Length: 363
Image (cartoon, rainbow, N blue to C red; front, side, top):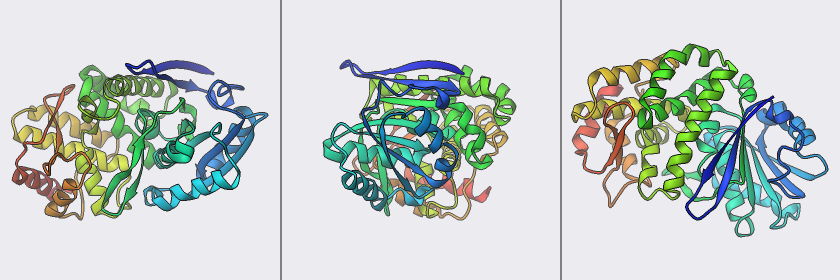
């Protein structure tokens, strides 16, 4: 067993640990400081089949544990799923002293977190992410939400967990496509904040694809370090935190336009990053050679870099519904060269449409 700890710290003194390593789910008492006597585990059938019994036996001994299983996939990230979690909390008479534990990927973490944020005006939350994407992104930072038919994550709350437990061993059972989708978020951190990390990913991609524990821990740790630093400085996305959305405004719109079933979230983000980088080059802020490095790394990770079956104007319209839009203008995160990005709402819509159209033609 290996264990490392990072801390997400806020200016008002709040903090919580990110515990990462190998063999964590077999560590007796690991969650004792973070959970009370009553626990509701939210998971899905696939993850529960792999890990629920172990988690109950090793992490929640001598506690009353209830379980609610939700559907697997983005199309279940809905108000109905959220309501089913609340129904279970109420039916099993959970009090304000309960702890909601999200055992799963990004969908489980987001909807369980939203339930924790709102049940009896807020109860304790622990994230145990079981996908790479959730370990490096969605479990850290306190964004919780469900989707609406008109857009992704439109209903939610900022709500920080008491702890995040990221055990890279669970990635061994992750389907190949989902594992590769998680690499998109890892690549994102290199683009937005650390050119040396991006270069390390270029050198280490083969080892990551083999799921070797040591490079996986390095990738998760550096990704979480970057996200923790950004979130600590801008918890509610009033400024700096927007840089974490590199590729996401395009990606979320592509997900919505394809009915949330053509692309995994990470795949849509990869396409969004590729489009954002190409648009950055058009605007003169990113060298073409670095655009190609990004596209090549995404391809090596087995990720798409172009959308199929989408209309550029429809994607643009959906982007306008994004919660990050500002006074009707689309806010984009564009790249100023690997390791640096900036946020703008001044990009001409014609150039945005052309970037989407050109990418779609190359699909």
